[in-house]
Length: 522
Image (cartoon, rainbow, N blue to C red; front, top):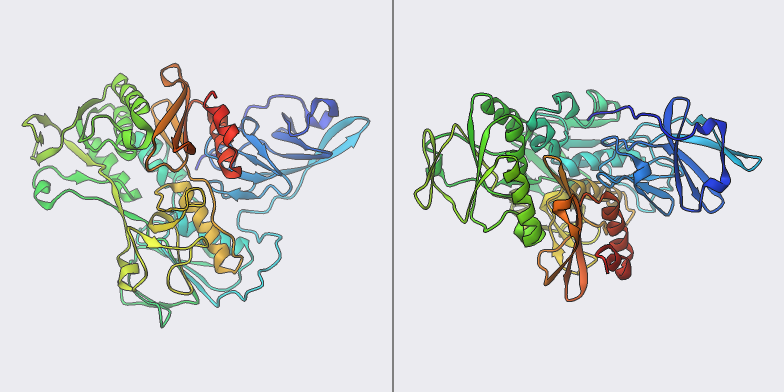
């Protein structure tokens, strides 16, 4: 991922700032020794940390302080003010820490403190339970990669094996449909870690291999090349697979699906020789692909059975807004329509309309990859069932990410969430559960989606609702939509209001109903 150098603004903190300028809970952006620094006051304590998020260089000074943490406004990464540690994904590396001195009613940022790398063991007491003799992780995506790193950060010293069906080491999957596909992000931004990282931290990385059988009783995993791996604890993080069109519809143009880095590379190559593309499905992935192909200069048609895009997720008003954004950028929609046939030079719709094209992309949903779990006899229900510690029905076997159906602490229902940040945080929580820390997974789900210059942030989880309260108008560049069911807020969607999204996340965490009403203009 990219690392941008921020322009230095605010006071030179090495020269000191008056303590009176720092209110309790307040933040002050400045610089020291040529680097951006954020000073935060909590009661009588002063903290100074690097001012840029280590995920996408987001401005932490535009975020919020919650307890002894600061949260990034862009993608909700969370950092400890005391240690700089990245407490919650998507950031994996800590921010720098700086020493602060008080003299004569002023605060001086004096020097940068030594910064450990992202996989240095944390300063935490060990769990009471004995750790397993070894850990195997199936799936090297968001959850699996984050779990492997967290095991080492928690001080686990036993063997860790990370098995991925992908040929590549863990990478930034959300970017595959965004900047990378659009051509504005180089491939060197895509890997989550530099070459050699996993070996340096004692993580055995096996790529290009699928797990084909799991023997829970013998604690043994079999791979597609016949190799077997014995384990003390196992994490299933196999993710989800794209829903594919019926075989008879593949007789014409090749149909592209977007899940892996190889998929994105193939789509980029195909786009280079195309003038017109048909995107089947108005999902977030489908629409992000549409925006990226428009950035490459293709004419884009979106075909979907719904009356409006994304209505099932963000409601009618925001769905209409998203459609308008895409139409303003040249996308043509064919709604309440499906593809009947994919020919050699285009797509025929169910009403007989034919759209000539050289490129077809299907973004019609995903299904959790649960075959391995089902074959092992684990309890499943549209995903792998886990408890609040992400433990499956088999002792010593956990699940995280897109396959995990877990108890939602806010509704009491079992839910499954297909979001990158949720998967990473579940992987981190699963690693701690493996080590006996018995922490309940209670993170508020979060995801973001970008469409041209419009970013949509979503916190919470609402599969259904009976009311939507809208504050502001997205056509004016900003709004907040609050989704409730029987008077209870389940989710908050924002456009152009990054700080409000963070505040909604914090309010959902603490069950602050009044705070959520204020966000909705109440």
